[in-house]
Every structure is written in C-alpha cells, then in structure tokens.
Image (cartoon, rainbow over all chains, first blue to last red):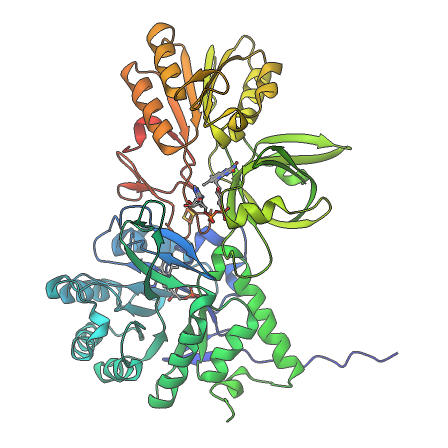
Length: 311
Length: 263
Ligand SMILES: Cc1cc2nc3c(=O)[nH]c(=O)nc-3n(C[C@H](O)[C@H](O)[C@H](O)COP(=O)(O)OP(=O)(O)OC[C@H]3O[C@@H](n4cnc5c(N)ncnc54)[C@H](O)[C@@H]3O)c2cc1C
Ligand SMILES: Cc1cc2nc3c(=O)[nH]c(=O)nc-3n(C[C@H](O)[C@H](O)[C@H](O)COP(=O)(O)O)c2cc1C
Ligand code: FES
C-alpha cells in the first residue's frame, strides 16, 4: 500500500496594483449582488475578491422587463445597471461586507464623464474598498448613447479624469464590442489604469418567432456564460502580450479548468460571473480545483503559471 | 443540493407530477415558495428552472415535495424524461410565499392552467389551519385537459367553478368571466383572493378585486437566472418599492399584493 505523499503548501496568492489577493478567484460585477446575497451558500471569507454590482453616483431603476433570456450555453441580460447608488452602498452594504476576508472591489459607472468622476471621488480613500473597477461599457448619454469603451480617445480621456481624483487602485473593465481590443487596452493604460478586467458582455439579441417581438424589452442585451469563453480567452491572450499591467480574465468561467486557461493565457486573476447563478458555491469549488491542479502538476506558486502558454 | 426523484408521472397530456425526496424541503417550504432545478448536467439548458412547490407529501415514509409542471420548452421536456431514482440538483426553497390572513372566512382561489400548482398546497394548509373557512376555486384552461387537481379541491369541500376556452368542461370562455359574476353577486369584504396563472388572467383578477376593495394576492411567473436576488433579471414594476420602482419576483415575491403591481 502506498502512502499519500505529504501535500506541499501551494501559494495561490497574487498581487494586482499593489493589493494582495489570497487567491486569484473573484466574483464578477452584477452576478454577485452586493455579496450578502450569497452568504447562505458560501463562506465569503474564502474568496480572493468580491466585485459588487455596478454603482452610480445616483441610484438607478434599470431597464423595463423582460430583462433576461437564456440562449444556447449562455444568457442575455439587459438589467440596465439598476443599483442602489454609491451613498447607500457605503452606508448600508459596505459595513456588512467589510467583515469578510475577501477584497472588496467596487465596480462603478456613469452616464456622463462627470458622473464617473463624482462616483470615483466619493469612493476614494475608503479603507474597506481595496480597488475600484471602472465599467466603460455603458452608453455615453452626451454622445448619443455610444458606449464610452468603444472609442479609444474617449476611453483614455475618461480613465485619465478618473485617475486624477482617486488614489485607489484603478481597474478598467473593457468592452469586447470593439474591432481591436488591444487598442482599447492601450488607451486605458495610457489613461492611467493599474489593471484591466477583460471582458464585459458581448452585445446580442434574441427574437420570439411566435410574436415576432424581441425577447428583451431593451431589444439588445449582453451575452454572458460559457458561450463567450473562447472570445474572452482570445482577448485576454492578445492584451497580455501587448501591455505590462495585470489582467483579470472574465467570460464564461464555469470551472477550474476554464479559470486555469485564462491564467495560462496571461490573466493574473479571474472573475466568475454567470456560473454563480447556476451554482452559488462555484467560486469556492474553482479555488479548490485550481489548488488540486497545482498539486498534481507540482506548481508551488500560482504566479508561476501566469502567461505560460506554450507554442 | 442533490435530491432523489421518487415519482414523475404524466397526469394529463403534457402535464407531469414530479415528487422528490427531501426532508429539508418538506419541512421548510411554505405555500407559494419555489425551488430552482438544474435540468441536465451540461450547459444547454444553462440556467436552473423555477418550479413552484405543489404539495408536501409522504411516500413510503419519505417526506417529499411534489411539483406539477407543464412541458413548454426544452427544460421542461427534459424534466419529463427524468426517471424514478434519478438524482436532481435543486436549490431552495426561495421566495416569500402566500401570506395567510388571520381569521379569514372566505378564500377564493383563481387558477389558470398549471397555475393551480401552488394553490393546491395553499388551500390544503388554509383549510387545515382554519376553523370554519369557506373555499371557492375558479379554474380555467384551454380545454378539459388543462384543468388539473380538481380531486384535491373536492377533498377540501371547495366550491368549484370551471371554465374552458373550447367549452370541453364547465363554462365556455375565460375563467375571469365567472370570477367577475361571482364578485358582482357574492363576494364581500370577508373574502380574500389568491391567484396564479397567466399574466393577463392575473391582471384581470386584480382589476376585478380592486374595484370592490377585496384583498388579492397574485403569484407571478418571470424568467429567472438565479432565483435568489443576485441578477435583477426577474423584476416587476411596482407602484412603490425598495429597489427603485422595481421589485425582485424571486426574493420580494413571487407572491405580491395585487395592488402593488403596475399591471
Ligand atoms: C416562481 C415560479 C414558479 C413556477 N412554477 C411552475 C410550476 O409549478 N409549474 C410549471 O409548469 N411551471 C412553473 N413555472 C414556469 C417554469 O419555470 C417555466 O415553464 C420553465 O422555466 C420553462 O422552461 P423550458 O426550458 O421548458 O422552456 P423554455 O424553452 O425556456 O421556454 C419555453 C417557453 O416558456 C417561456 N418561459 C420560460 N421560462 C419561463 C418562466 N420562468 N416563466 C414563464 N415563462 C417562461 C418562454 O418564454 C417560452 O415561451 C414557474 C415559474 C416561476 C418564476
Ligand atoms: C446579470 C448580469 C449583470 C451584470 N452587471 C454588470 C455590472 O453592473 N457591471 C459590470 O461591469 N459588468 C456587469 N456584468 C458583466 C459581468 O461582470 C461579466 O463581465 C460578464 O457576465 C462575463 O462573465 P461571465 O460569462 O462569467 O458571466 C453583468 C453580467 C450579468 C450576467
Ligand atoms: S432571478 Fe435573479 S434576482 Fe430574481
């Protein structure tokens, strides 16, 4: 009978923009509420980080329903960034969330450049907030609704303005709905981003052929889930080769294998989104799975795996 | 959590009753609550399906909860092929459930099609807990085939009024026509309404009861991604609310006071 070899301690911690994460698994904005929605299912202390639902300076009602429809191996959502607003978050949600070990990352957005700046200013210098994640995939009301994150000049300008008003680590979350993701990534870096989250949802739609109506009241919505993983992985890989700041990989991560693919492609950490809806404890299982993989492959430190894609 | 299927039978063409063995659910579920069921073990269908709890029962000394479902698409079609003994992955119970008014004298249930599912459990509990409760059921469907669970209500001595669109059982027409007559002639302040079914039916019942200030609770049916308040995909517009002008059907509902909904 063989004796199990003594398990070596594996270092899963990573660093992004000067912040230490106990492991590289975070939960993605808009899929994890304000964190407390999940306390019945998992121990939030185990997570690397929690990215909360996107906040704006003023609360927002969001879009008319129907807001969600399932598609092949994915889902479309047009929630419309419904949120309680920065102030209520700080006063009511943050005091509950800060009790946990996981880093709290606040995702935020605005309808105008000024609203981005106001939100970032209000969120600046709050010790419980480890970093800010800026969502630039929303419609620019001043520019006829075209998203901020599809025009490199506007992206760079907006990131620079936000950078000026915050000393918090600034993560810019890129939209995949662009011709060249590398151009957008470089624009964010030039504006002063400390890290990049890649990707947000892909724009899509679905139609009910019985009524010939769109399945979403908003007509179009953001596609997420396993259907988008190959696209997300390709974008992470392209950007990782082109910029020097850390990348957080997002898109269709359902299990540890998916997460590891992103890390090998060049992501320092990952965010789990849609998968939380199907299995609210999946993020913890992914952390375990990554640990097991490292154990098996004799990888003592997860950092040694980042960007190790072989040709 | 994984639970075992004890029974999955077609009770009328396209309608199935599925029982799962689960002491936890049997003990903790209130009428009107639901579970989220994973159908299949791959990515299509990706999301869990919301299913109301229809009954709590005991099969061979095993505490069970029963679902009553209609096959409408991919997920429910896969459910209909599930076999006795098979394990399924469910989460719940979720949602608020019906609020049972104290000292209620008259309960009126209005069901459209498979909307009867949660009302059967509600009626049973209300009759069991009350001393002298009069119950009425207004049930409608496209045809005779869509009118389910009559025996459950007969057992409770409920007065039953049936309407089918093709006239194959009961009155011909919409169930709300019968409800309208009943409200005009009989219903008064002592009655409370509980409705579940298609949106248009709920809307009509809500208007009829509102006119006479009769309390009415409706159970809404929305597409859901999570079922526990995290995605904000299931919202309904309300006259006032704590999430702006929308409320979550999964956590604030699925049961609402009819007056609260912007129909
Ligand atoms: C709280 C709650 C309790 C429910 N309880 C029951 C129940 O006890 N018995 C029962 O038969 N059904 C119930 N439903 C509805 C059930 O969830 C849907 O019929 C099911 O999800 C359809 O899945 P599918 O894959 O078969 O259909 P799909 O292929 O997803 O869709 C087929 C058709 O059904 C519609 N549909 C899909 N999901 C829903 C939904 N959640 N609500 C309404 N329409 C939908 C689609 O728009 C489409 O027209 C409940 C829904 C909710 C929200
Ligand atoms: C219902 C829903 C709401 C979302 N809300 C936000 C949001 O508020 N801000 C944001 O930056 N991204 C939001 N996203 C995008 C996710 O954070 C993530 O980038 C995307 O879903 C891809 O990852 P996934 O395939 O793992 O879900 C949302 C996604 C979903 C499904
Ligand atoms: S189904 Fe996700 S919030 Fe209601």
